[in-house]
Image 1 (cartoon, helix red, strand yellow):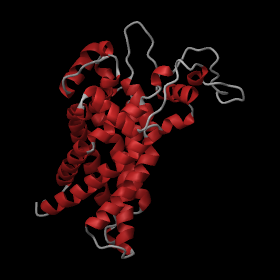
Image 2 (image 1 turned 120 degrees about the horizontal axis):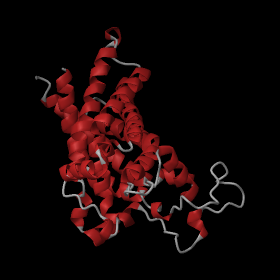
Image 3 (image 1 turned 30 degrees about the vertical axis):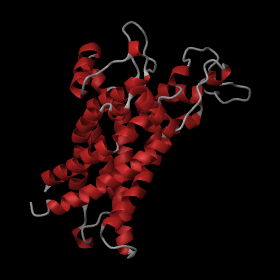
Image 4 (image 1 turned 180 degrees about the vertical axis):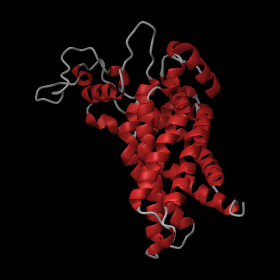
Length: 320
């Protein structure tokens, strides 16, 4: 039963990840907007009083460095115009590996914990607090397993926005991981892992727990029968909850993983907190919700495809 949960979750996750990959790529590009305008070493940045009256963020102090922020449609159109249609699937091999490692682990563990912690006397249902706890634990473990693929995916998706001379030009996820180990050491595969773990815990707890909760509520109240309509409604609601909860951590994770560390020079960010502070000071607090529209645009369909596929796979494998 435990292995079956991993297989079902893995199949559904790979299908959902590949089908929504272009939206995820656009989200990453939007989250990196404005990053190059940050000036970490400018002396007039005040850590505790960044929003005091009269303070002008570095990104607003010079018209020459200001970059207009564009929406997801504009980002997608520009991406296709400059890099071609195939660029929408840049890093898809890393997405597949990430879903195999991360999502398979979290989905399988969540189902195992649900069955172990459920109360047989209450029809096998699980209280919301235990669902959240199961999601937090499963998401954290899954993130540690899948972090190398996550780093490779972010870099491959973001590579096209760099000048030609600065691009990494990874050929595949295997090439990306091999070169990262060779050029930056094995520890680079777990760069930003604390952020990945935090995000995965938030996403898994909010996404899986809320899906189960919404589904149970719809069935208990008799609004719909257990079918496609219930699965789509519950999964879209779960996707919205997951997007709201995880977007700030996702922005910081993307920037930390994408930063280029050159020998002999200090990295752009010393860690997650440093990245968050520099981002807020240079671009304002709402920068933590950059890419939210493509996030919810991607998270909604991803969650719908994930759970609808999962329910169908469960039906196919129910006799195994």
